[in-house]
Amino acid sequence: MASHSGYNKNSSAVKRIMQEARELANDPSTDYHAAPLEDDIFEWHCTLRGTPGSEFEGGVYHFRILLPSEYPFRPPSIMMLTPNGRFELNTKICISFTNYHEELWQPAWGVRTAIIGLQGFFPLKGTAAVGVGAIEYPPVERKRLAQLSRHWVCPTCQKSNLECLPDPPASGESSSTSEPNSDLPSGDAIPPAENTLFGVNVDRALEFLEASATTTVADPVPAFGSTQITIQSPPLIAPKPIRPIDAGSIIAPASPSRPSTPLPSGPPLDELRERRLPPPPTPSVQTSRAQTPMSEYIPLVLRRSTPRPPILLDTAICVLLVLVFALICRRVL
Image (cartoon, rainbow, N blue to C red):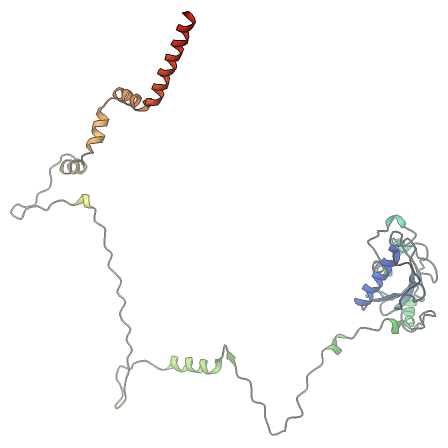
């Protein structure tokens, strides 16, 4: 795309068109190709691949997109150039994102949106395909035109549709099968790779485990002249459970001279335990406080709470009283 020095670079339409041209050049697609003309950036020539799964599959169609000077605030116009059997040639098409429906256009849309939307309008039929510039050809004729469209040449671009939009590579061609290396001599064989896991040969480890599983550790009758190694693991002895003993439930045993007789029925064991183990004495301070009535604490609290006035305060009060008394006597006399 050549540089266009004759346009106002500060125009919002020019800025938007140049931005979309760069985006389409940097991010091409295998389904469409679009670029503005070198002498007029408001006219774009686009090449579109036919919709898959329809009678337009395999066709490649060329069309024009005319952008207004108020773009992107006003929608573009689209005119088909390649015979297709769906739209008229050199006629502005009436679809939802063209100049026929400016109320539906959004400034966030662009040239890429118009191209993708046109591809979706190709397979429509019936009342959905009715509009200005729409035609209805039989499916057989549309398939024939789709095959002829591949070699159609645009008079302005001077290129065929296949040159503007080549066919994408097939999936089988991208993945090539690897052939054996013929540079190696025929007598040399490539050693097989070792089956290792974390640096350990897995095959050898499996052989060792199988051999250890088939051999016995110790025979009941050893062979003559053979050494036998018996590995005995220490026995596992579970610890004996120890039941905790309550200190209060210990009762002195009966004397050996007297036979053991059952205890007579009497007070329960808790009362006997209280008799034998007297309660611990409480501190004397708490006992004296519990026995002292609350009325005796009130004068003590009051005496402690009233602070004693300092000597300087008493002296100041006496001096003030003397001065007041002297002033009164002077006025009277």
